[in-house]
Amino acid sequence: MENVVKLGTKHANVVSARSGGISGVWYVALGATLWGLDPLFRILLLKSFSSAQIVFIEHLLLACYAVPILVKYRKTLIGKLSLGVIGALLFISWGGSAIATILFTAAFSHGNANAILLLQKLQPLFAIILARVMLKETLPSKFFAYIAVALLGTYLLTFGFSSPEMGLKDLGTISCLFSILAAGLWGGSTVMGKYLLQKKLDFPIVTSLRFLLAIPLLTVVLVASGDAWHVTGTSGGLILIAVNLLFQAFFPGLLSMLLYYKGLTSTKAFFATLAELAFPAVGVCVNWLVFGQKLTVGQLAGFIVIWLTLWVMSRNQSKTAA
Image (cartoon, rainbow, N blue to C red; front, side, top):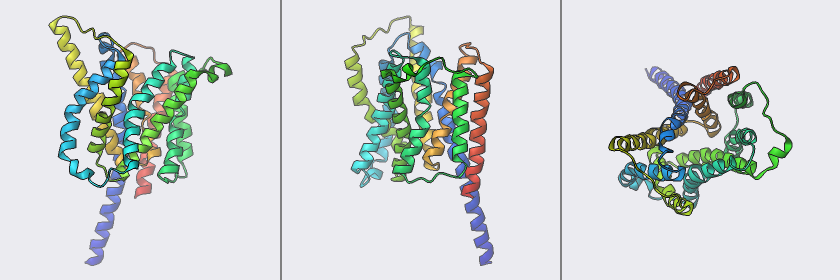
């Protein structure tokens, strides 16, 4: 009887590990998928607000979720707010959410767009290196095959089967430096998020602090930008703007991050950074289906390559866990 119980327990642990491995990767991918829906809401909002104003309002709305969560679970933070934890929180909040976005946006106003997009593909490499150094994560035997195929998929999404039209001089501009720094901050945010979860901070707490800590910095950015507020229109138009702000904040904003950090809880950082490639894959489809931008054969091939990579990766991760 004891052997039967042990066998049943072992089987349950195997099933749990397997399901946890699958759900972790796919939770991250689902969160990244919601990021790809962002343009559906942002396009209309950009007619009434600047980018800085949209992000600032979005974070104020998200504070309606973050403050109650922080108050409710404040006792779970006791004894956990070390310098390392505070630094990681500021990194994902200031670096990943605010500074990286500002750098990436500024890059397009200074240089070759193809060079910027190409260098942005370095993001998974930054995450892999930091995960190895900070978290001591060991790379599985097939991981280099995963990343090679995934990077090929993102290249096809961006450029199709053609080569980017640029020279070496295009890679030596200040805009490319901005792109590399943004890629490093985004890749580092994945690793820092995993670090916080390893320190036994629950993913709703991490999500809440990410939003709240960004508000002071976004306030400074908004004041420094000097953007004037011009919100005019009919009552129907104002209601539509308000609805878009709410959906922008709570779907691509809140829900995506909750799914992302929930998945990151049971997924290694270097797997998560590849799962994030669902974001550009979905973005291409949104541009095609909603905004009428032509989808090339190369982009379709890139879309298929990325999702097949995620499927194979999740299967192999679940087998390893089992």
